[in-house]
Image (cartoon, rainbow, N blue to C red; front, top):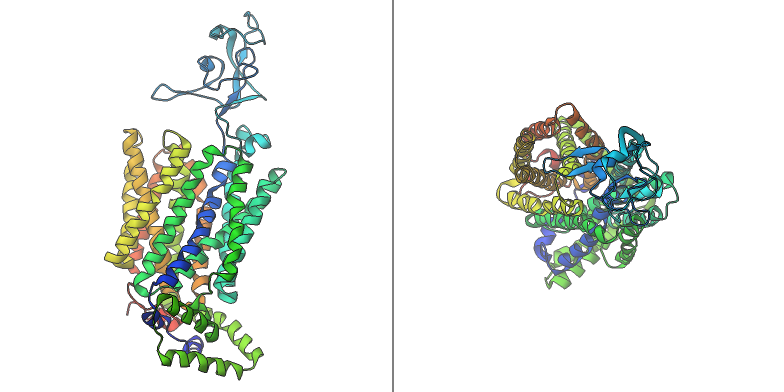
Length: 554
């Protein structure tokens, strides 16, 4: 018998315990709601840089034409004084940092002219750079704060997103292991507080470098909130409620993202960041309210603590526990008292690494997990790639952002239905193939009606959202308990590495306009086909050991 299997022979089967205390009773529902609330703020923090480091609409200030006190970005004469482009609908978009040189031979003066007297005769076709700007809204971001205007500073704004994803990579890699080692609840609470503190520091940043540093740390903290809430949620319910626990959590994530659209009422980036960062500090109270994961306690042979939680759950759910189950907790308590504490600590420390070694010794799991890594990476690249392309939708950017986020809710609903009706494998494959078809179709319809492009775009986002929801549940159900959190963390880390490529994919459109969407479609197609090679885990017991994980699908 393998080492991890031997270590787990005496581990109580929590799925069997749930048949006595209830798979999703009042006790689980209350705690599930509590762990979902921090996810709202984690989702908002994960995309706050879209607005705090966003580029406001601006153009050059034109002396002699613009009012000194109240310049109008949309003035009728702007196309005369500032170069730019015209849309198919006849809307003029002025250049950001260039204006036409004033005609010295005209009667044009540097004092504002009466309304309607700023004409083409006042300017030549020669262009010049400007140092003063007129803004199209009251929005204030780090662009105005630290003078990050014009093309030469564009990389600094893009680098904020890259830094954010780098923080996610660091956090997901680190907190998965720490949660397996020190417990789900402790690391979950640490991530929430760290996210809040670094978010406040980000709002108080004094220059671009300090803002970037705190943005990195904020992403590190944010990265642990959702995955650990997901793990805690999945581990507290029975097999028939797992998909529900993961999908509903995603509803909260989508709503948290969409709430950023309300930043239209908080145009100052410092105020926005503070509103997102101060409230999460209240979740410190969870230390005394939310229990540790019972599955983790049982996997670590801490049956006494697990027994307290189980008895409390049975009491709240108004269910009776068998005498045999109660006796098993007492016997474990006596056994642990007779065990040397140093040996116990060494045994617990080595269990995770024993399981990792067994995974690498199994060619079945190596092939399976490499396949999953690729599918995770495709999900991240396409998901974030489509999100970054949401600015291509015409209209109000706050409304567009909200719609792109809210379309994730029907995407998660689709995942929920497919998980229950089709199982994990077909739900994942079908979602990826739906995204593939719509991405390819929208790529070839760039010159068609705007409503058709928008519809295909949203359907593609719906498909990849559904895929992302399914893959979290699917991955957790393929990992043994002792490394489940770390395993999901490794997959998520690899996905974030893939996401770092997403901002560069749209640049390929300068060579061939449909190319970014065609690449998204091709990658989704390949991942969708490869997902059919994975074992089905629908209504199966969560594997506690590596041997049980290998046996999945047999």
